[in-house]
Amino acid sequence: MAEDFWWKKAGIFYAFARKSHFVKNVHNAFLERIDELHLQPGTRALDAGCGDGNITFPLAKRGFDVVAIDFGEAVLKRAKIKQDKLQIKNIIFEFADLNNPLKYPDDSFVLITSLHVIMKIKNYQTALSEFYRVLKPGGYLVISTTSSNETFSHWFLRYIKKNGIIKSFWDIRWIIAWGIPYCLLTRRKERRDEWRWKKEELQKHLEDSGFMTLLVQDVPYIHVGCALGVFKKL
Image (cartoon, rainbow, N blue to C red; front, side):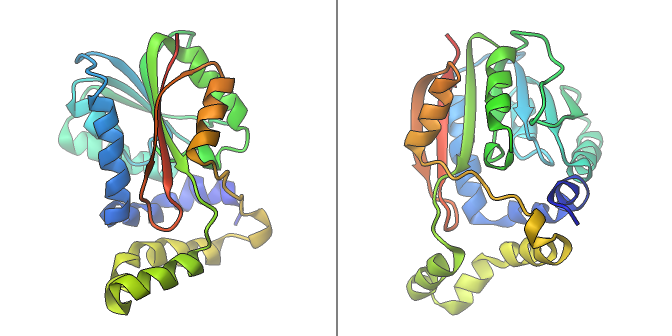
């Protein structure tokens, strides 16, 4: 199975990550940065790489009008089922590939969010350029990415020494539930390596795309770390 097919069809396994406190650290920090912008209800937002709604639904609950896009058909289906169940009206879920230009007109959104997606986008320059284009002047981009190249085995040995083997395996159970199917169902030669940007590199990529940096920070996230940034279009 090719990597693209995994994310389109089988990426539902990633839902296990929702139960991890590692992921919750990132989600909480991400939402705190959004709240600090003090945007008004009715703000038009684009959630780029929405998955099954980790950030989409919190945005909608804050009163934003959200367009949520993703390449994964399986996770989009889950998100739409959840939307129907919760009867939330202010979200539009749509299929989109961030490697390609977006269909939205210039200056369409006041806020763009992209939670841990850009590192998997092959043509990330296109994605960042499109974020800038569809964002209104004075609008904000809140984005996160993987920030460390440390190997899993190196980190896990350190984690076991600190927390013990039982807690360590319990804490990473979602990685096992996601990682084993991924390794079994994708061909090694077709797995796409992630871009790994430290916070200084994230800042440079965004500034090269025209954004002004408001904040860049590190957030603990499993062994790989997370660089989280808030940027503005002048």
